[in-house]
Image (cartoon, rainbow, N blue to C red; front, side, top):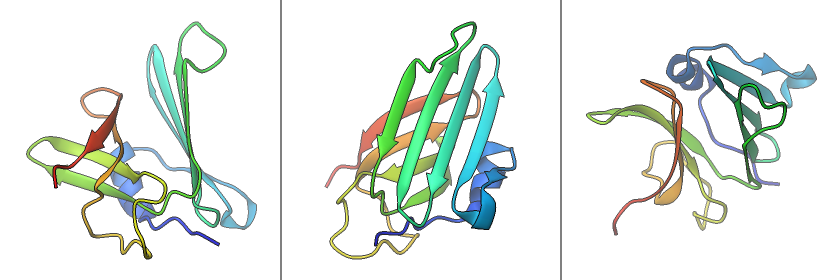
Amino acid sequence: MPQLVWKPLDFLSALGVAPEVAEYGTSHKYVVSQPPIRLEITLWQYDGDVQLHLYVAPFEHPVVRYSMLGCPGARVVDDKRGQFLEFAATNTFTGRYDGYSVIPYGLRVWVKPQICLEPFVYPT
């Protein structure tokens, strides 16, 4: 069974919000609000699943729904570009993700200075 490799304290620092943790720690949900935008990131670390919902007021339903099933890992990057999250695309790694290696492609999530979702690929 795939498990998501990630560091909850790094997510807390990068997102600036504490997660809602499900019973038995089966999921963590982060909600970042920057009106009129709200970003919800839910991690099911034991299944390796990640779901992002992006809402824009006054709409009731998300304008973006992005799911990553079997995501091997996520990391927080803090460099000259700023601080952001990188989620590895499914089947990026042949083995288990170590939590430190560069993720070759996936989804980047920024919350500072504003919420932004960005697919990425590092050149090989």
